[in-house]
Image 1 (spheres, protein in one colour):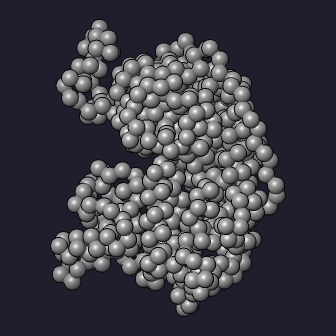
Image 2 (image 1 turned 90 degrees about the horizontal axis):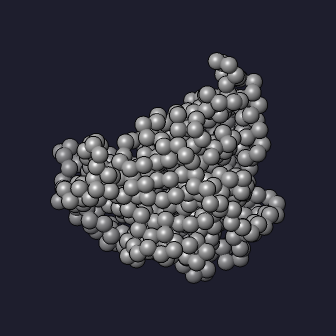
Length: 535
Ligand SMILES: Nc1ncnc2c1ncn2[C@@H]1O[C@H](COP(=O)(O)OP(=O)(O)OP(=O)(O)O)[C@@H](O)[C@H]1O
């Protein structure tokens, strides 16, 4: 949109004086934002700044204590998301909420208004979806099963789903976190087409360069209140970050290799069958057995994966989600059986329980902090103890040592800048990024020999991201071996000593991070560049 038309555009959403308090925290305070119709309006801020709370208010999931919301110039008051949907607001969640074993069409119409007869008119629904998809440049095939779709396609289905319900204002919560660069380009193209047709997009992201690329206007929230609305053409990513933090950022230090010759983790011929683990015939070498499985045409989730990680080394694993990363983690943690070998230092881990592996020195920052990382209903100090019950400071004799655990939780809060009123706060009351900082702090505190870091900075702001990177680099310099799995390609390239690409369960390329671009890496990850071994 040209700046003249932009200025002329009327507001689609006006938030005036929004305040929301939780016990001990003012999450939003006197927020003022005017979102012009037909624009992409980005909202940025540190972890815990209050972005999610504000979006929950706008989507009817929470009620503000004070303030007014106007949509298309009219005062509204939402009691639930369905009120927000009726007013033309749609939310595209970061974690897709699609049913895998249903088609695109079924997912889109699921939960939308039933037809008068109570049955779905498949012909009419298909026609409407096809028209919507064509009108907005969102190509998807309504008849395909969602489980067969890639991440970018799934996101398009989510967008179509809210458009199908009549949304004119779309809220996108960190939509690029799971996308490779090529998919980000496509998403941005889609968003440009949507706004060109008069739809309005509210875009939340921690990736400031992307925000600068796509937004027509950016609002910065700091400690619960709006501190600036800026034109993306007039600020740099660094200035934006400084507005968020309220002070100048430190310049990142240059890095030196700390990789040693000592192998800390050795993974050899790791292979996992899709339809159930069967023991290999006695005495048959694993390589031979893997060949046999292939000859039989069995589907393999991990296909003969071998690599070493040395003391002081970060090995980055690049891959589009669903190409075997989760299975690799599960095999290393002893959660799911696989063929092949895993050794930590001199110790062969075959047959070891997850707890024993953890005790032997494996730390684990899980990819899904809600399902695997935290007990949301428990306090922060209890979460500090979680998974570390048998080690100091949690344990003294046979008892959990509350005092030491609480003190250590305070230490993590300080070291990792977790924004919380205290250690008795429930984990569910922390913002997403602050939950993540707590988990990273906890896993690093166990002083592991080897760490699996799955998306360690997902959802954390640039300041906290830099702090977590520093902690990882320091631990690496002290000899920690790290398997880093991340969808953030700048993070993978910036932190890793070597990058392996996983595609359909196989390691297809070994790349040197010092001479690879995110675009080329994305090419390997999607299979667009054929996987040849490089080094
Ligand atoms: N249900 C709740 N109960 C208590 N406090 C809450 C609740 N939800 C949010 N908060 C607090 O409100 C503040 C704002 O949190 P919010 O989730 O809105 O931040 P955010 O900007 O979305 O952060 P992030 O980038 O980490 O997701 C935080 O201090 C958080 O701990």
